[in-house]
Structures are given as structure tokens and as C-alpha cells.
Image (cartoon, rainbow, N blue to C red; front, top):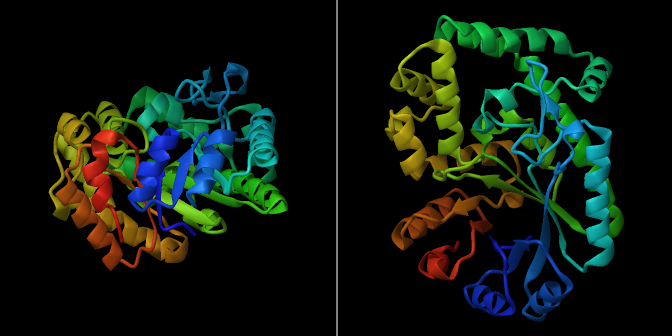
Length: 353
């Protein structure tokens, strides 16, 4: 397994820079020229694929109110047979045409809370209905609960906990569906003798999107996206912020109350995280969240397969160095940086184990 990897778009000169900084793997949309240049430097190349990408809304998810849509504007239902075939075809094409070391799956999941409940409360398409029937899940009960939440709201936080309990089977269903997809791709990459990895949600949130760490522990490596700050989906602060925003609407509570409730569930209270949604999204969470999440990941998957992705943008070199040291204390042997930029060279220089 690689020791220090980095995401980004790279020129030949960029590859020389990252090589000099001690990076031995890059994650990118590979080309023949890039692969050849990287191989000359002894750098591994992994092609990144957004798993369920499609422009066809007919392949989208169906939410609890019956609306069909593409989540994030470009992704379809993981159970749609055409979407699954498209993913398998992309993976096979890359391995057949490029001498990459392997493939990394991104977005190998269902919609997240960060897309809002309109996207998140899904999917109820015919493919999901058929799959749920085969797996003996009552998908109609799940839809009734979600529809009620969206239309009537919830009276109390206790009501929310009750709803979550009733929706637990839906989360399990999501995880089993994603496991099917992962297993099929793992079989394909083995035929080609290539590695397979995945960038997945941080452990505290992963089950919400159908990502069980046990499923991904079969892969050559797992990249937990322990992004403590950022203004987009998968960033822990953003996901919690949008989740809190949506819960404020249906619970009728103040945002500080909802955030405190979420922090208690995640065991974040001692870290003194922001109690205003805008502060949470704009400033992020304390970087100690990274260690808490990685520590949890080591209990769910083999530490030898873990390579946490450190979001280096917006942090100074001293903080990045501290994070690196703390991760080494947790027994982490591999790190991945997100993402490459010449302006971030001071931070990249100190990211090491």
C-alpha cells in the first residue's frame, strides 16, 4: 500500500514536485502521458471515478414525495441497472486502456443529508422497490415515515429518535445495496490484477449514506474523508450543518438546540464545536474531530488498509504537522492529502508520518 498520496490534477512538473515532497501515489483522472511520467518517477497512479454519474434524469432517485431527480445534479440511483452497468463499464475501460495501479471509487453511496432532505429521503424507484422486495425490506413503511416527516414535521427530539429507529431498516437496506456494487467491482479489478480503493464518508456519518466500513474493508485501501472543514458534501461540518438546518424546520427548535442534540449523538460535545449553523459551515469543526473519527475508523477496519484524507486547505502548516503527528500516534501508516496546489506547498511539506 502507498504511504503518502495526494488528489489533484497534475502536469509533468507537478509530478516532479510531489515526488520531491515524498508522495508516492496520485489520485486523478489519468491519461497515458500522466501514467508514463508518474511511472518514471516511481509514483503510483490511481484513476478516480465518480461512481453513479449520469445525465439522464430517468436514472435518478425517486424521493419520498415521488419526485425523480439526479442527486447533486449528476448522480443516479445505485440500484438502477443502467447506472450500475455504466460504472462497471467505466472501471473495465480504464483498466483495459491505462496502465494504472488501480481505481478509486468516489461517490459510491446514496444521497447524503448535505444535499438536503429532498434528495436524502430516497430512493423509491422501481429498481429499489424490486431490490427491497428481494431483501425483505418494507420500503413502503419507510416512505410513509419520511413523507410524514416532510409534510408534518416532528413535535420533539424524542419523536426524531423514534423516527430514526423506524428508519434503521432503510439504512441497512442502503448498506446492503452498496455492498453489492462494491463486490461486483472488486471481482472485476481482481480479474485485471489491479488495486481497488474507495473514498468514503467519515465513520460517524457513513451509515447514513449506505457505507458500512465492513463492506469496504475488503478493498485494498479505504480513504475516510475526515474533512473537519469545507463547504460541500462529505465535509463533516457541512453535512452536520445542513442536517441541522433541515431538522430545525421539522422540529421547530433553535439551531443551537439541534446542533447540541447532534453533537451529543456524535460524542462531539467536549470539543466545543460551533452552536450556530453559519459558523459551523464557514469555520468548520475543531481539528480534533479528525483524530476522533480516525480512531473510530481503526475500530471498524484494519488500520493497515486505512489512509485518511486530510483536508489541507485553510489550515496552516503548524496545524497540519500536528495532525500528522497525532495520526501517527493512532497507528496510521498511510495518509492522503486533498488536494494539490502550488500555494499549499508549506502544508504539503509537513504532511508526513
